[in-house]
Length: 372
Image 1 (cartoon, rainbow, N blue to C red):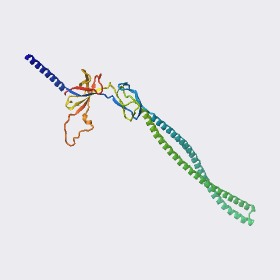
Image 2 (image 1 turned 45 degrees about the horizontal axis):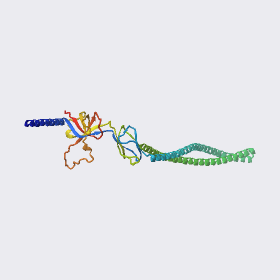
Image 3 (image 1 turned 45 degrees about the vertical axis):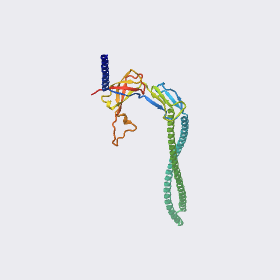
Image 4 (image 1 turned 90 degrees about the horizontal axis):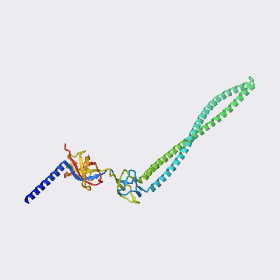
């Protein structure tokens, strides 16, 4: 009996020794961690970009949805009413702009015609005044000469050296020329007065041009206002589209955060959707275990929820910074106090099979080391 007991003890020592050796050997050849989880890049929390009252939530948790499927909607009545009001304001503004433009075109046409006519009249009267002045000067010279000739003929006639009719002819010509000169002077004064009136009319045309500029300013102001309203309308139309929530990809509703007829704020979560076909594993690996772990290394994965099954995979990436680097409250070592802590790095693993796995499952992971 003692021999049998001794044999059993020896066998047990050998068995546990072998198991211990196997355990240590496995640990030396593999980077092992139980800080692994199933993750998905296609996990999204969906929300509305506007607030309001939920009209419909069309899916429940666990339902499958296709990309582009309508998931939920918010009552868009307020946005629709506001957009209609803005549209009416835009139409009213456009009518005002069109009316001002018609008026502007008419004034511009009238100014163009008036400018052309007035400038031509000014040129004509200036030319007429110059001509009249030249004629008056010429006639004044002629009158002076006729006055001398008439006086000479009068003396000769009194001495009966020339016929009386010659004196009378000269006297009549002088009188006629004086009357013509007087008429020309009156015409000259009339032309000058008319020229002044035309110049005043030109000033009125200039005032009309100022009114035209004022009209242009009003049109620009209304156009800017219209542009602002168009931007507002565009924003309202966008908000109307925001009142519908669509699936961004094929997946399953993982969580429903809201209920029908509830009033929610902008950004409040409504659904969480996940694509169960887009899964990978991530493990927080201690820096002490990182030696020999490289991209492409083979991996064995075990899930706590799935017994007696190992999933195969490969290391896809190793993040270049430790997890604590991105901590909201980083360690402060400025004072010189320092306690060395074991840092952990995120290793991403591409799985060759994902059947049975779900996002968030805990994993035990063994990464085959490759030594240089």
